[in-house]
Image (cartoon, rainbow over all chains, first blue to last red):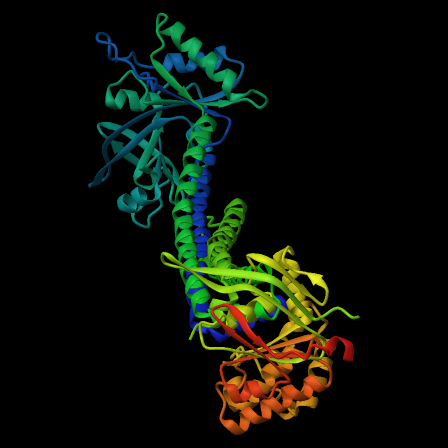
Length: 402
Length: 235
């Protein structure tokens, strides 16, 4: 049989049985669309998280006190409390390591911020000018914290937009005196935008010099130290150098953790890719279900068309011809199902992008390919049995069917 | 002497029915020459249907040999047998067996479709046959728009469109009223007069009597055959 005739013959059969064809089309289409949409969701979530992490910058190391061991084993029985990271140590890191361009020590607490009679309890962040750069925060008015030796306290404060509104209303705040706890500060800058970082809402917070924050909260240790690296220095080796130095400072005991966002990024990336794979596989199961449906419908078709099969054999169709007829039918069904599924899935993904422009919904190419290949394989694979059954029908018995 | 169209030699076929095995064909030998008009008659269960399937290459003998147009068929593979069916054998069935979703013309084109004949050529040949059988104005009708007689004419057109040497008709008038049956038989006999070898299988004595040669079957054996012993010499 010529391929064109084969296609036409099968198409005619399908058009004759529209409901049956439509059912398979919908099942196959749903399966393919499920894979397309689910993997786009996973990929979108991954892209979103990665984007957030990338905002930290690749040239940054983060030190925090305590050792987070993920290798298992017993925690130390004595001396469990780790030593503080002091401001002096942070300063030493900057002076001793050529790779470190700038340091942003971090102290976090909460205190009452007041202007005249109006006041509220907010998050207080003690740090340096570098913090705003590293976190890609920007000022809507005024100036950043002054660049000076961060071991020295000062009375400058950068406040978030929401806090400014609460305290000053529409009046200008730059240069105004405020009280934080029992100390006096002066507003030098307003933080713009949403400004959320590390789960904190910085629009309702005040940022002051780190040494002042230590005095305010009466602490000597730091919550975090952010290190910005000079260009040309890799995070990996520098991380080891920082660990080495901190160990030296702490009498040979490594009781701090140094992470590079890059490493965290890689971990998150692999977790999220695994998640995308998993939900893609769930979509794949619906393809399998569609395959079983195709098999059933094709088996019914074979028994309904027993006479026709017998006739075709009598007219000179070989078993291979009959098999080809049924497989072509399956191929047409599966193919149009895939087409419909891709179309519907892409539309949904497109709608998703319109709805949540921040999340980069995008079906990864490997998922598209896998969906198409799986759909074709199940469609043809599950039709193989019915096609073989049809081709093995005895024409004599088939023709004598009522 | 030319090769006979059909040469069956000591052909046997048994079917299992539970514990019993039934001899559907029991050492059957038969020679049919080109252009002969033959009726195979017998009660149901006599083996005539099995013989028809054997002649039509729809069944394989267990023992014995079958040469069609001089070609030994019993050891051919399925693909080759399908091709022989396509090119050398035309079937006409009691129940017509038209594909209902196809028009009369498309039904007639089916064997050529299987053969892989180009569409233009197909159309041309189908129209030739339809013209001869007076079916042209019915070309685009579906089978449910045709009368029984017309359906059988379409089936006959489909059987002869590949110009086979052998036309096998299984109770061709069984589903027709007597007038349509008459017309169909006349058509088949005309085709025979033009040279095609015609084998009609029937249990209807009157229908069988129209043939020049009658073969009677019972219990899987040929019990009588009034072949003209001099027919080889006549041709």
